[in-house]
Image (tube, rainbow, N blue to C red; front, side, top):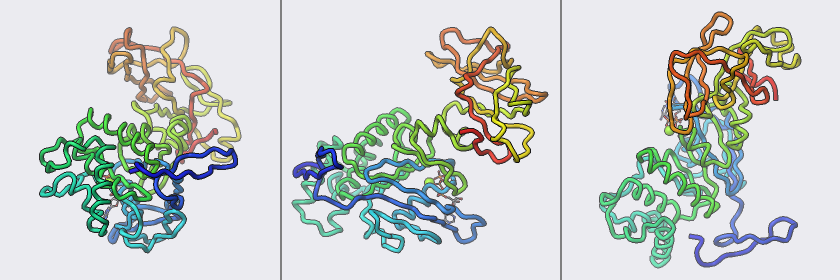
Length: 385
Ligand SMILES: Nc1ncnc2c1ncn2[C@@H]1O[C@H](COP(=O)(O)OP(=O)(O)OP(=O)(O)O)[C@@H](O)[C@H]1O
Ligand SMILES: [Mg+2]
């Protein structure tokens, strides 16, 4: 797709023109407004008052642990699941009550669901054939999609004669030929081995940018989320925790859950007692603004610090006894425990891979003050902006 006619539309007041594929269409934004899903027999909502606005052409990744409501959110957007409360809009139109076929979306599932008795080309064109599209047009679109996905030489093969990665591309092709307003993808890479997953992840990102089709992509893998998404929405127990760019999410997690979920190894989250003016970390005091804890009556605060924002020092700091050293070549991750006011707390630090410390050693850690995060130990919410 995107081959052949290009229309140009004026963009803003700057006078620049951008190529837009196909005939001018309405802006395919997606909006969830207070969307709630309660499955029969479930004691709490699988998706709870989801508010999310996705821009036209944006690649939004929904991420979170198993059972947090990712697939349910996507299936409601696709019309495969009823919405109990709230509304869903595509391109500004309320589609909450629309049949899936009337929503102008295309979905790519985890288990590709290719028809084994059809060739790759027939699989890709099937949706268009059902929709009564003209034969020559189907052929043209299938060939265009095959070219984009590097599948041309496989068009006459059956799916069983393809590798996992190639099948995955056929499933993508089937979505592309439809020229939908929105792509929905539910863990489309989870059947691929690790190496292929990384490759295919890059291909999907590049393809999405090229087609500029609004995309909602579901994964439980935070690395996938961070590397692919323009923005990432983190869900937990059906509740949206934060929706931000990957960088913002990494540098400014709104709560302890997001802080611990995004990043690998995870951010250290240390429960530290409040002392005068702040929390005590290995003899020095990380300042906590009085206003941040005013009225919440906390005795301790959770300090978040990423493994790369700690450093092994010869000066004073927090003493850590090393349990495990993971050597990765360039870096080493050092896992140990610190005695913090009578409690052992686990801690991980990134160290130089060429001269890593050894198991059993005691090291002293300092931290980059401007790179710490403070959270309420009670509510888990971020305390300081
Ligand atoms: N058809 C159903 N009937 C009853 N409960 C359901 C149904 N589908 C999902 N659920 C429940 O809703 C919650 C959210 O499920 P969902 O499939 O959306 O999770 P998910 O985030 O996609 O998880 P995973 O990463 O494991 O795919 C879960 O608690 C699940 O058990
Ligand atoms: Mg799922």
